Image 1 (cartoon, one colour):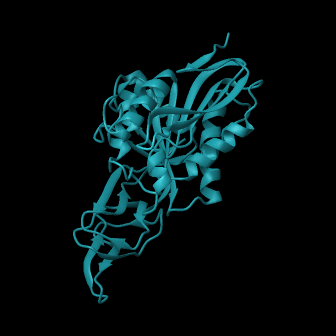
Image 2 (tube, rainbow, N blue to C red; image 1 turned 90 degrees about the vertical axis):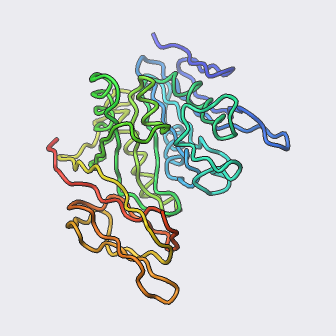
Length: 325
C-alpha cells in the first residue's frame, strides 16, 4: 500500500498533488527564504524519486523540465512519488548567478549543509536532510549556466558498496543519456557525492547552458527524467535508450591568463592530444594563450562566455571509449 509523504508540516497523501514554498530562514527584511517543493504522490506503490534543479542559480532548463513533468503527472496512475525542487538555490537564481550574491558560496560544494551556517549552507542543510534523505532515488539536474555549454552527459559516482554503485549505474543508464562520466568522490560536498555517501543512488544529468533556457534542452532534460520514470515503472511506456554509450571521464583545462576566449571546436568533436582547441587573446588581438587537448578524446563541455579570467574553465576533454548497450 502506498503511504503518505510528509515534508515538515506538509503531508501529501497517496493520489494527491501538492506544491508549497518550504521556508527555512528569512532575509534581513523579514521575508521567508527557502525553496519551492512540488510533489505528486501516486496511488500505487513505487519508488520516491527526487529531481532537483538550479543548485546553481544560472541553470534554468532543469526547473522548466521539473515544472512541466509535475503538471503532466496524474497521481491516480503514478506508481511511487515524484518530488521536484525546481530551484534549490533561490538567492542565486534571483541574481542569475552560479552562487548566491549574499555569501558567495558554491552550494554544490557544501552538502549536507549546516544548520547554523551561512544562508547557502542552511538552504543546503534543509534540502539535504528534510527532502533528499526521504527519497529513494536522486536525480540532480545541472547545465552549463551562463559561461558554459555542455553536451548531454550523465554522471555517476563509484562510492559506497558494490550494490549502491550498481544502483547508481542503473539509474544513470536509465536516463538514456549516451555520454557517461563515472568518477569517485573527488568533489566532496556535491549532491551526487554526498547523496551516495548517505546511501541514496544519486546521479547528475548535465546539459544545456549558455545562460539560456532553450526548448531543446528543456525537452532533453524532461526526456531523461521520463526515461527514468518509465524504467522504474512509475509511468507507462518504454524508455528511449541509446544503442551504445560513450564513456568519457576527464576534466576541464583551466586558463592561466585573462582575455577574450575563442573556441575552435564544437561539442562532441573528436580531438587528438596536443591539438589546438581554443585561444585566449589580449585587447590588441594577440594570442596570449593556446588551449590544447591534453589527450585524445571528445569535447564534452566548453566555455561560451567570451571574457575570461586567469584560472577559469575553458574546455572539458573526455577520454573516449564506446560501450554497447
